[in-house]
Image 1 (cartoon, one colour):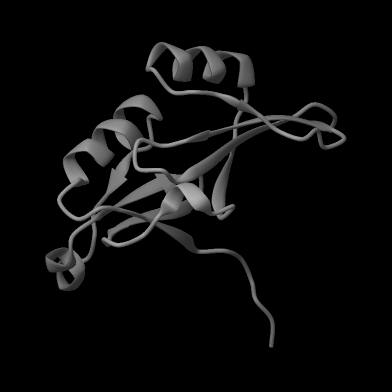
Image 2 (cartoon, one colour; image 1 turned 90 degrees about the vertical axis):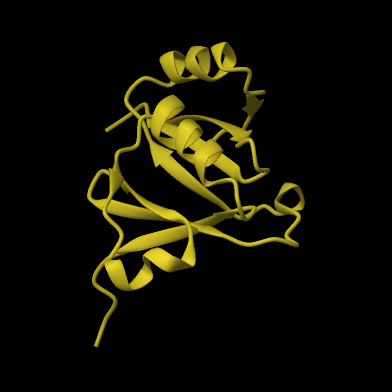
Length: 123
């Protein structure tokens, strides 16, 4: 018995903010939306594809996302271009503690979720 892989991770946004979340995650970050099963569509939120993985965006209120270290880290191929894209879209970029073999940055999405972008510098 073993865990084979990570299938998906879920983040949340406040209820009623799906339109704004789609604009950020699909528009700014360019993640494609994938169809959510009909049996779950009435629960709000939407699903995204990130490489071979899924990101499920759910809805919930009463969460202070700005106070948590919990986050998703997206592997990218051009961190400098992403830094510029984020800044052009009014996103405050935060520098991350260095990790050998990687460059990375962090930011908070418009809903307070912490996000990391990471690029490998050595194979």
